[in-house]
Length: 350
Ligand SMILES: C[S@@+](CC[C@H](N)C(=O)[O-])C[C@H]1O[C@@H](n2cnc3c(N)ncnc32)[C@H](O)[C@@H]1O
Image 1 (cartoon, rainbow, N blue to C red):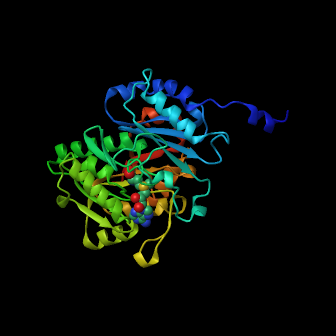
Image 2 (cartoon, helix red, strand yellow):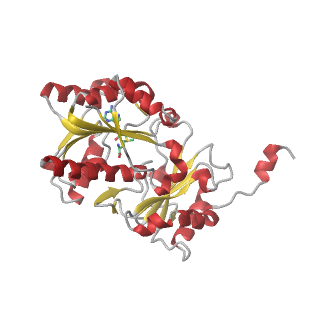
Image 3 (cartoon, rainbow, N blue to C red):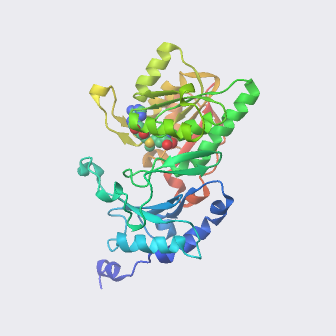
């Protein structure tokens, strides 16, 4: 039998079989009660390449990367098995639905069209969930949507960095007797801003998407924070930095957590973004907005920038010197097997 035929004939283990052990490996986090949203299955680390399962309150999302997941992976059967495993007595989570999120190998070929399974209330297994649900994480509550496209509104891998931001703002206010001014670029649904604002910090959230900023404003409301006391700028990040410089705006903490790529839109003043090409310049320009002693949190999921030492090199290139590094938390326990997919550095520039 050749290797190809052998692979085809090898029975792949199912989520139903693999999930209990994967959940057990994260049991301490799940039982700690710090969050109602966590990853329970991490691809090959947990036994199935290209397949990830996140639990967000009453619903789970099963992320399947086409061309990486085994060819024999049957989404409907696996979703049903996952639901049974997650809600069964040995795992015991209150999950009522599993939604399927298929990621095409080349998403640009999809031409912006999304498969109906990521936009329909009916899940792949279980009962339909409400359009949105609120999940608690640390000291805040965030709105997540299980069938609002390929993402859910919450990047779980940033959980401990959100907490770091909250703590940094608390310490700043205690030390200076004044609230920290926080700039959250590429803010998406404003998770970092909410974490900061919850401690009394004054936040500015920048994103090109008005829809995501509205979601962010709802996240403020879910936490009883008046969004009117905070700034939301529907703008390209570089445009905002230039605007802030003209206006003399100053920030004590700037969060940089951009996507790997984003298409530009000349009419809307949005430049195309590429982390590999633009990260250093972003760091350099963001640093010009910092107060004395101000800090940048720079984060990325871009594969090339996650290589050892690479993000640091971009930071030094952007600043023109080596900054004073600050300690960030470890990658959260539910992502421990995926460490090489994340890089984040915090540093003070002056
Ligand atoms: C990966 S998400 C950022 C995640 C976010 N930092 C968080 O922690 O939840 C990418 C976001 O960047 C926004 N975006 C893309 N290009 C942008 C640009 N040039 N300026 C500002 N925001 C941009 C997108 O609309 C999207 O909300």
